[in-house]
Each structure stands twice: as C-alpha cells, then as structure tokens.
Image 1 (cartoon, rainbow, N blue to C red):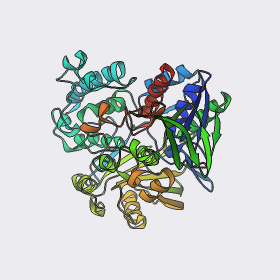
Image 2: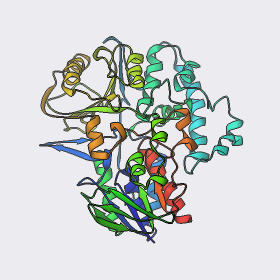
Image 3: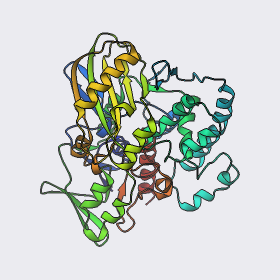
Length: 460
C-alpha cells in the first residue's frame, strides 16, 4: 500500500511516522521549502523563533504516540511560573497558580471536576473518532454535573469563581483553542486541568526541534519528502482518488491524506464531491493572528508565557465575533519569551488574536503593544530584528481559509462528531488529518488526529 500525505505540519509528520513505522510506503508533498507547517522555525540572522505553538500540554498524549512509533519523546523543561497574567491596570498581576481573594478552596473543587472531564476524555473519547451516539455514553450520563455539555467555558467557570482576575486566568485558554470564553464549550475546561493540574512544559530547543526530530524519524523509515510542491488538483474516478496534481505532475497512490487546509482541499475536488461554499459559509472560523517576531538585545523582565488583558476583553472578543479589528485600547495579547526557560535566547513572539478575512496594518499594533509591554515588564525592549506575520501570510503560506490561524472554532456545533469528517463520506480512499478534524485544535489534538486516522487506514 502506498500513502500520499499532502502537508507536513505536526499532523502530517506524525501520521507519516505512524504509518511508516508499520512498514507502509509513505510520500509527503509539502508546499513550503521545509516541514513543520505552523510549527516551523523562523530564522532572522542570529535569532530563531517558534513560528506557532509554544505550549506543551497533555504529555500523556505524546508519551503514547512516541511509544507506538518506537521513538523517545522530546526532552522537556518545566516552565515556572507557568504563565504571568496582567489584567487591566498595571497592579493587577498574578503568576501561574497564584489565585487570590481566598479562592484556593474553589480551585481545588474546580480541578477535581475538570480533572474528571480530562480523565474521561483521555480514557473514552480522545483516542478514537467520536460518533453522535457516543455523547450518550454512560460515563457522561453518570457525570452530567461534571460534564457540562451545553454550557460555555465562562458560564462553567462562574459556577466556581467570582473574582474577575481568576475568571480571566481560566478563560484565556480558550484563545489557544480558536475561540473565546463565551463561545467555547465548557467541555474544554479540561485544558485548564492540563495547565493547573499537569503543569506547563516546553520541548528543549523549541517546537522546531520537535519538528526536526519527527522529520528525521520519518526519513529513517524511508518516508519520501517533496518540498516546494503545492498540490493544485485532485483526480477522482469511480469514487476514488487516482492522483493529486502539482504543476502538471501527477502523484499516484492507494490512499491520500490531506494535512492542508480542509476548505482548500475541498475546493480542489470535482464539484460533485465538494462540501461546497454553502457549507463553509455556515462554519464558524477560529481567529487569525497578528504575530510579531522580535529579536531583542539585553535582558527582558518577562516569564516564558505572558498574557496581557488590556482594557475590556469582551470588546476584543466582540470584534472577532463581528468581523472588525480590535481597538488598540481593548486589545489582549500573548507573549512567548523562551529566554526565561532557555538562558541565552533573546526572542520574543507576540500574538494578537485577529479577525479572519480582515486586513490589518501591523505597525499600528506593533508600536502600541511594544510600549504597553515595556510598561508591564518594566524593561526597555531593544529590538534588533523584527518580522510581522498576519492573516494574509497565513493565507499565502498555508492556503488558510480567510487567513484563519487555527481552522474551525471549537463551538458546540463544531465539537467532536460535528467537525468535518476524518474520512471523505463519498471518496473511499481520501482522509483528512489536523486541526479541522477531530479532536481539534492544538499540538496534542493534531497528534491524536494522526493516530486516529492512522488506525482507520490500517484497519481498512
């Protein structure tokens, strides 16, 4: 059997390794000149940056994956403090587990409950493709008080906490799931257990090193990579993909898996096999992002992960919901500073959640956010090199629908069995892996997606 994978993000690389480890012939076609997708490395002179993911959560998922493929997981470094949150005025600052106003007891109760969601999800749901009837599993029905299927994350968190600072500390995780606390289902409170119950880690050398190790392991097993190869057509006959096309060249195979943008892949299919524009126009997209990659000189008084809630965060989220740009005075953002964990590194990455499909002028945000960050950190940030990366770049590099950074948001009607299918419903040898499919957004989730798709292919 010959497998052709289109795209070499974490999902594509993990699937290539998973299948090649079973002796299957795998070819990977990648549009860009290097592997990694959103997790690749950016180099600006002497500085290197993780272009995308920066949180290593749910280590149980990676341990299981690496065990199955016979490789060692990355060497991890614990992030301490786990993160720093600035909320509103300068004085409102807390670090990691620093819950104030006597809410420590509520935190214990909260973690007991979301820990059960986390445990049940790992045990029963995350390692397999969910069907609608799975939502009636007795384990869920017995724990309906803990399995809040119809609540939002914010509503669920308010059952335990009243303090605004604490609610923001527990709500911001939704941004990394492609949503807001007000539209992300409370089921994803399990991410807070991964943070507060399991701790925050970082792969030594960055996520770029993780990509390189996956790539090396694939090469060791004979996986064939073709970079600078953008697929621009799919040949389908009698309900099967016969080949994909790139610049006039045809690539044949027995099974085809797209790790590319799902909507883009759908648009390449013959019309009668497409989900179509009507389907995609009804989907709720996750935000795009404005990323500022800053190589700095000298010390910066920041932890590894910093979250800044500036002004009224509901106004920022409302802008994302209603498709206009966030106001400067009400723009929340995230900062990754690897130098806090790996001494000697001097790279800052600033992420501002942005509205997909809307043009943005990076310099306007850059000046305002840099001034704000200097005040918050008490540091004079001396930028030697910089690069902006926005919605248009996501669209150009990844064919991302409207420049979304994360794919489809984790709304209730786009969770589990309601996400786009892992296997095309009418083309028997076409599969999809990555953030659009089950289980969803994030490095652990796309790794799970690779194992689920790999098992489906192997069993067929």
